[in-house]
Structures are given as C-alpha cells and as structure tokens.
Amino acid sequence: MRIASVSDLHTDYPENRDAVVKLAIAIHEGKADVLVVAGDVSHKNDRIRRTLAALKEAAPIVAYIPGNHDLWFDVPFAPAREDLDTWDRYRRELEEVATSAGAHYLPSGPLYVGDVAIVGTCGWYDYSLMPEALREGIGREALESKQYGGVMWSDARFVAFRDATGALMSDIDVARQMERELLAHVAEAETRAGVEHIVAVTHHQPFDRVVTHTGQMPWEFFCAFMGSEGLGAVIQSSDKIRHAIYGHTHIVGDHDIDGVRVYGTALGYPRERHGLTEEEVVATRVGWIEL
Ligand SMILES: [Fe+2]
Image (cartoon, rainbow, N blue to C red; front, top):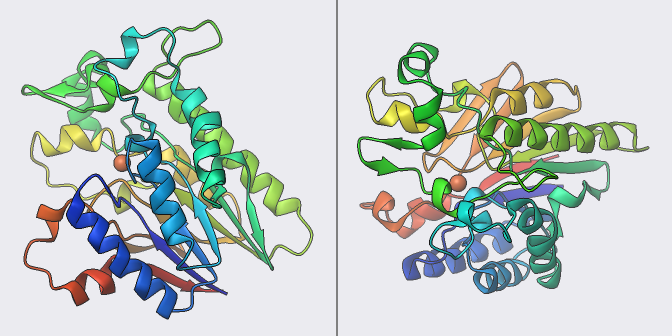
C-alpha cells in the first residue's frame, strides 16, 4: 500500500492553491492508495472542503486531521466569545466539512485499509518542546499569554478550548486531552483483527528531536507552541507504529526516532519556498511510504 502525505497547504494563498494542483498530480501519478492531509489547510470551511474534494481526485482515500489554523474561528477574539468552543469546531464542525468532501476525519476514529490502520489527532502544545532552561526563565504566565517581544502566537486570538463548565482550558490540559485521544485510537487499532501496521498522524510535533532549535530568542519562545512530548510517548507505546507523520512546522524533516520514521513535508507559505523550482517543491513536499 502506498501512502502519500501533505501538510500545511495554507490554501488562503493563491500560489498555494496552484501548488496543491501540482502536488495532486504527483500524488495521482505516484499511485497513492491513501493520502494523509496533516492539517493547516485554511480556517475557512469552504476552502477546506474544496481542497479535500480536489485531493480526493488524486487518491481514492483521503484522511484528514485539522491543524491549529483550521481550528481558528473567523472572529476578532475567540476567548471572549462564550458561545464559541474549539472542541465543537474540532469534534463536530470540521468532521462535517471533511465528510462532505468525502474525506475520512481522523479525530473521529482510525481509518482501516487492508492491514494498515491510520490514527491521528491534531495534538496541542504544552511548552515541553521549548528548552527547559529557557522555559523556566520565561515563566508560565508569559507562555500562557503566547506573546513575546510584541509578537503574539495567533492561536491566542482565534482558539478557545472550553471545559464542561464553559471555562477556558489551559494549553497543557488541551495537550493532555489530545494525547488521550491518540492513545484511544491506537488502543482501538491495536486490538483490531488483521491490523499489522499503525501509521500515526499528528499536526503538532511529537518529539523534541524533530523540532528545529536555534538557541536564539524569539525562535525558541515559539518552539513552546510546536507540540508535546506526550504525543511521542503515545507513538512509542505501540510496536505497530513504525511511521509517524507531523505538520505544523514548515521545515521539512525526516528522522529516525528509535526505529520509528517520523517525518513532515509541509508546503508552508509561498515566501518560504523562494528559489525552489516547481519540481523541487513536488519532490520535497509530498511524503511517501510503502507498507
Ligand atoms: Fe500549524
């Protein structure tokens, strides 16, 4: 079985909509049986729907996990809006969008194809991917504000995960809930008869070793929002997981973490591909595995 993957298509950029067509052609020509979309298509439902429907032309099965951008509410400041809950967007609204495009919505449960199970969660961040010494120096309050040197991580404006009482949840609690979601999907796939391989998909990054560290601020401050090590622990808990796909960072990466191939092939923003030919983009922004 041939599994192709893409992430961070950011189709609000017209250049990226053109690039997605090129990627789709390559995925079709590469005879993918399944295409994984590892998040950050757009915050606009119609654009997510149209992108997934277009990618459905490239591969017979498309599996989608939302990224943080896909979770954004199109309002000036979501935390102040008590009528908005990102869990509802994650669990219900985006499932409807994906399903209407003919895609499998991974947060709702594993996708089974032959002897392969594909499991996934958006994942979240708990600041564990920021170097510990810097984390301690900067303090919890600054991390929770998601602001440094006058720059704000935009999730602070457009995301509002709420608990059962309607109170805003901390990033750490959201990260734990996402990890539990992935663990439940892995457990289900583990016990399913005939499953030999489990492929894990997370939008956020699951290991510190796949994060690019510069040692410089403000870069390292924003590493706090890259993912959680708890996602990696779930991936390492199953012997059937030998492949893990991530998105979120726009830096292409391919790593061996204790025998697990952990990789991401984000398309990213047009300015980040400056100088690359069309062929280079197609060659580096689609991940492939054969199982
Ligand atoms: Fe992202």
